[in-house]
Amino acid sequence: MTGQIQTAARCGRCYLQPPFCICPALLRGRAAVPVRVIRHFRERGKLSNSGRLVELVLDNAQVIDFGERDVALDAAAAAPPGSWLVFPAGSADATDAPPAPQQPREAPAALVLLDGTWGQARRMSHRIPGLAALPRLALPPPHPGVVRLRRPHQPWAVSTIEATALALEAIGDREASELLHRTWDLLVRAVWTQSGRSLS
Image (cartoon, rainbow, N blue to C red; front, side):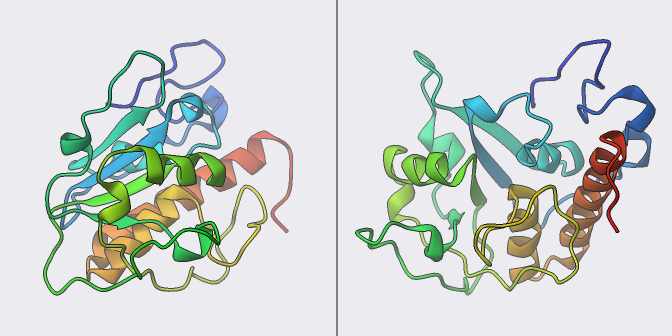
């Protein structure tokens, strides 16, 4: 499970200040396939990190940290045989030759997502054994009108929780997809309110 922050200033689950905590409003569900979020360890504890929310609301999702010194990653557990990688082709370096995004003919064994900055995610896609060879899932376009913590630098650049929602939508799991979209909307609106900003 995702490590919880235990401070008086923030909720240990959603990381928001207690007056803005969204935990009572969170719903839980189960995705059609297991979800593995491989998170760069430097993202752990950040309010802006959205991968942790996937684990908070999906029973069969798991966040696995990567990159911490002297902590080995179990690559087979992070990406079981038959997994598909959710990672936009547009984010690859010009010298990369990743597999072209596809649609699976049958349900993947698991969906694997890389959670971190774009630079961190690119490096993880190369450094974690086996990931570069995984088939990549073609995502539908981001939903219009989604509220965000920051403006995306590219049209395909979405948060990890959005990418998970779009991936589940792509394989026909609309119920879990909508649950994730709802969760992200709750968090973003709470973060904006907590910081005294307006969404209008």
